[in-house]
Length: 63
Image (tube, rainbow, N blue to C red; front, side):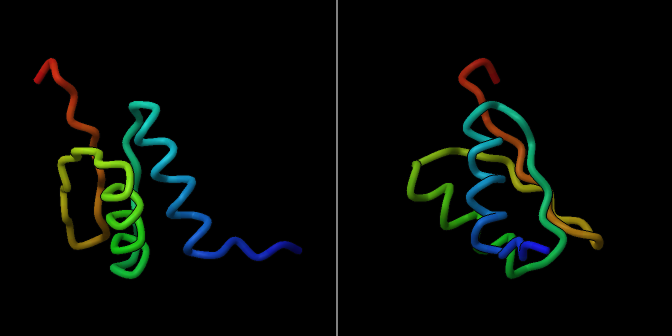
């Protein structure tokens, strides 16, 4: 069985966001790693923080 690390999951989620899709993080640790990945790509996102986790929604030029 392969272990799917938080760091790899953050990279995968950031890749989804770069493609225009939303991403979800269940933990604060994962959300923090995703934020770092997004900063390295200088991507703008809307963060919807809920009791259950955090959604990252890409901000487009249209909005």
